[in-house]
Length: 381
Ligand SMILES: *Cc1c(COP(=O)(O)O)cnc(C)c1O
Image 1: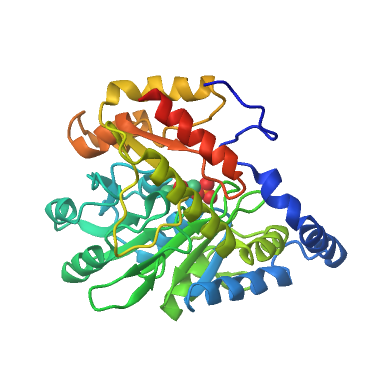
Image 2: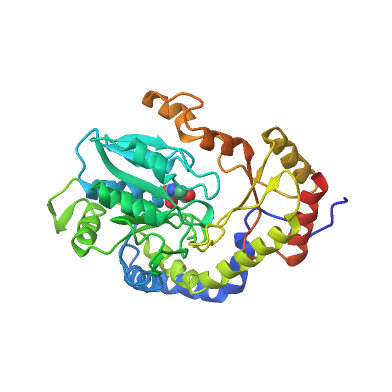
């Protein structure tokens, strides 16, 4: 294959292209913020909170500074005794464990399903001890973990369920009784991130928490504002974690386009599925029929892990970027060696780290770029 001269070149993420058609709306939002100069807790924050709540079917939304703070605030709101165990997937972004570790809780990695990459409910059940306080489910790459089983397990064992929904805003899960749940609104607390690369990204950092419990929402608001219950009256030890007015104003503009971007991602995913159909040695992303998939990433698996890095080089030589999310399971990260886990203890997570590769799926990829990426992958096998 020869490298076509795509303009722009194929990028893993193309925020400039995503923002270009919104430029007038974004400029107007920025101008209004400058005119109002209410940079902290300005009107756009409350407006964005209201609109995001509506988008998700009405939970309380508490804005904060980033998705990692959101996880920390969620755990703080549970008031777990020091040393409580918090079950987390062994295959996730490290932020999922970081908050627990910082709070004097014990992150306990649990293996994931090789299909959806979500927590394996059987492994969760086996990991529950009298010290377990919470389960943190991650909806990885755009698809829900097995929310119904995890909700049931949490209820049965009297544990809190936290959903790290940094990657799957807008995904839904349909239960066995036909209810539709919005990802992030099923746990005692759900969290999300507006890091620029997420499906709903700010132009800097941002995050939010979701809960249906109004007293927990109030506690989360206080915790995110120095534990303050009224001005200069601090009931709790809190954080300073706010969503900037500027970011909220920009997010309001972008939220109006999220559904359309999600549809574009789903359309590209379907085209990749068709392009990769029948390639022996390559697995396309599995779909749990109970969940929608908002394709934060389109992540393939190579059945032969020794060929993954070779495929990545092959693609790079053709001008096709790709990324390994994630190269190391959390229990193998040096910072978490103190937890005492060994290589091989979470075999699914470890194998995934060797087998996965994510190819570009941002909503402004041109059809000919998608077709070229399909051909580039095919030409390797
Ligand atoms: C991005 C991400 C986070 C952290 O969000 P920040 O806003 O970068 O702090 C947490 N968990 C997962 C799964 C993420 O993808």
